[in-house]
Structures are given as C-alpha cells and as structure tokens.
Image 1 (cartoon, rainbow, N blue to C red):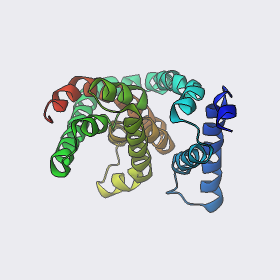
Image 2 (cartoon, one colour; image 1 turned 180 degrees about the horizontal axis):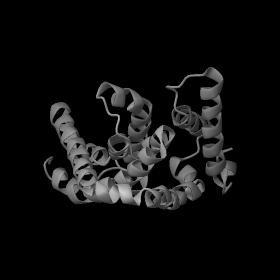
Image 3 (cartoon, rainbow, N blue to C red; image 1 turned 90 degrees about the horizontal axis):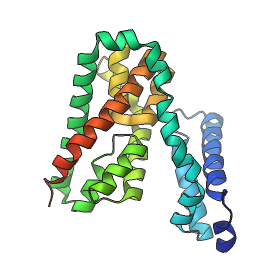
Image 4 (tube, helix red, strand yellow; image 1 turned 30 degrees about the horizontal axis):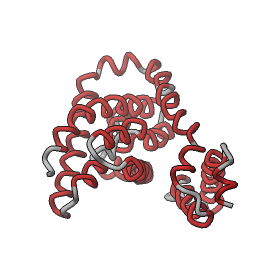
Length: 231
C-alpha cells in the first residue's frame, strides 16, 4: 500500500483537498461555527498517513502543487488592496505602526514563552514566525535553524485560532473600525485569518492582506535578532 501511494503523484493533493472538503462539510452539517475546516482536515491527513505508513516527505512531495499555489494566492490579495488604495494611503502610518506593534508583540511573546518553558534553540526558532503566512514563515524557521514541518504546523494552528477568535476579540476590545480589525487579524493570523476578515467586510480583508505582507517583511528583519537571544 505504501509503495502504491508513494508512486501516485497526486495522492497528497487529492488527500488534502478531500480532507478540507470533509472538514467544511462537517462544520456546516454540525453547525459548529468554532470548528474551522482546517482542523479536522489536518487530523484526517495525519490519520491517513499513520494508517498507510506513507512517509511525510512523500506526502509533501505529492501535494507540492498546493505549496506552489500559496504564492499566487497571496499575490491575489493585491486586487482588494488596489480597490482600497486611497484609504490605505491616508492611513499608512497607522497601518505600518500597527503591523510593527503586532510583529514585536508576537516575537516578544515567543521569547517569553521560551524563557519560561526552557525551549531549545530549534523549537524556539520554529515558533518565532508563527504569525506570518506559511510561504514566508517556514523559510524563516529553516534559516534560523528551526524545523520547517513544526513551524508549518504552528503557523496553521495560529491561523485557525486567530480566525475562530477574531470576532470575539474584536468585540472584547471594542474594535469597530474596519481598518483596525483588518490590521489586527492580518498581523496575528496571516492568510487563514484574512479569510475571516473578508467575511467581516472587503475593507477588513484588504487591510488584513496588506498586513500579511508588512508583517512578513518585518518578521524577516526582526526574527534573526530575536533568534540570537536564545542560545
């Protein structure tokens, strides 16, 4: 079975898409708004890999098209950005300042967690880029000596949690301004959170998409500095 699946070039792609569709169906069928489709999808993929004995590397290789599409999907966020360009130009200081605050808060939070729990350098490096999009985060983790697979899983979990809690957090902190909500979501929960931001409104989604880019650039700049703080 393992040899057969390893030789199937699109097995990982089919498995990933099927798992997501089943997760989405389960959420709608059970009417559980807190159940993000990615969560059962991830668990289903893990279960299939364990049952079949298929190596993770083979799965990733056969699902390579999805990884490739992360880049174009992120670029497509430029369309709503263009539609809200005038708004962004008027508020560029707030956008840049908010993204910087979000990135530094995330990095300081990971540093504090590492200090309190005694995380090793590899685990710490894997956790540092948790709040940026996968296409950028796994590369940062690898450059800093972290584990790409661990970092990817942490990024997905961060995005799922951010997406599920975005509405509640905005209500708790009284965030009503679309620009503020989009900036907070995009900076903390990257692309998965941005999908939630678009559900709130086009402005929220556009700003969240911009926050992904700015946060990614800022994390590339600051993450190596923070990585040196844990030996």
